[in-house]
Image 1 (tube, rainbow, N blue to C red):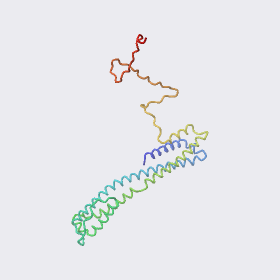
Image 2 (tube, rainbow, N blue to C red; image 1 turned 90 degrees about the vertical axis):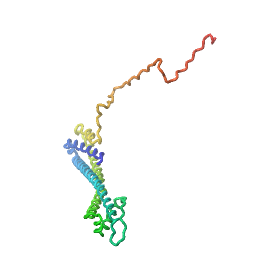
Image 3 (cartoon, helix red, strand yellow; image 1 turned 135 degrees about the horizontal axis):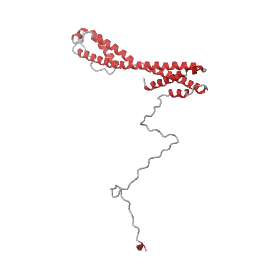
Image 4 (cartoon, rainbow, N blue to C red; image 1 turned 30 degrees about the vertical axis):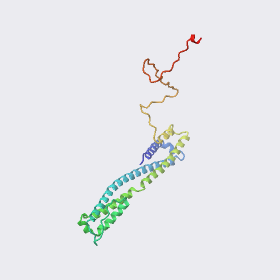
Length: 257
């Protein structure tokens, strides 16, 4: 289950807990009892969908790990039978060794194993004589069956269907919360602060208070004065990297006359 859906469920659980605090008032309003009941069911459906999707995700992880193990075993079986076929002369006196290359995908791997199983079964005594262990074909058939079952579990749509069920339940819960907010907003005798509290609790990803290291913003009516810039001090005789400005000497008054 993705983190976003978990956050949605937690927000609705917080909202339902607040509704429980004011359940007596809300259920006493016209239509309030039906809306509260609908909310209860919607949040329960969200929780069920979350559990189902997490369960399916766990099954898919297990199936994926099993597939890797069985795929390796089937490839080893194909390779071994092909190696034995190189020294076995099938009944009839003609025949080439079986292909020992790795099948490029799972479907071809299943097909290759089925072909080898049938071919070896037709001359089992000869293949057993040259290295195929007794009971190996039965074990190979069991590995293929388990491999197919694991692939079916991995391609199951139950994980996505559980996600869809959650989304639908989430929308129903949102509609119920919207109506309950309207009841609290329009009822003159509504519990004080209940509306604001309900809105805050159903917010997804509640705001986090800044820690002590976060600078606080100035309060209203407070002005801040920027720190004065550091004074520029002229260093006499210090080396500079800039070209000094060109100065001109005023003309002598007598020369000017």
